[in-house]
Length: 141
Image (cartoon, rainbow, N blue to C red; front, side, top):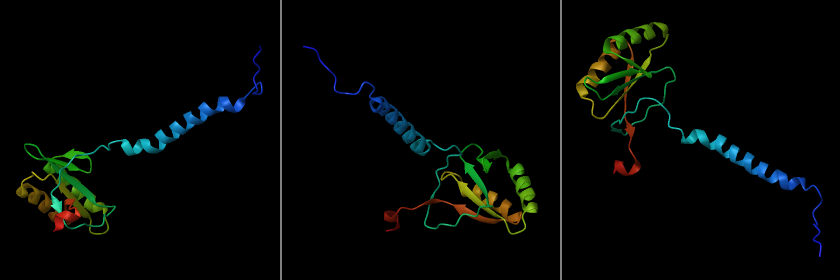
């Protein structure tokens, strides 16, 4: 007995199905891939805060991380206190309006050091905001 196939000699759609699978997987990786990437920057464990401020796009962000002495970052660049004051003064000269500084500090940073950084920004004519991690709803009670 001879077996005879009922399919046409060239079933092209059967060869295309693995390509659809491949394109589907590529699409999933391309669309979802960036959401799994950890964004680089300076990691800070900020204290809790009940208040939120609208983000000023022109604001300078000063980050204070743990260290001995504490480490200062202006945007994502490591600076000393002297360099920070100099950079803030240069930035102030370029601004037409009253500039804003956001200070993100680690929860373990002494308040005296944080205050010293805030006062140096205030002396340069900046509006200073201390940022904190937002509280969850259950923590308000």
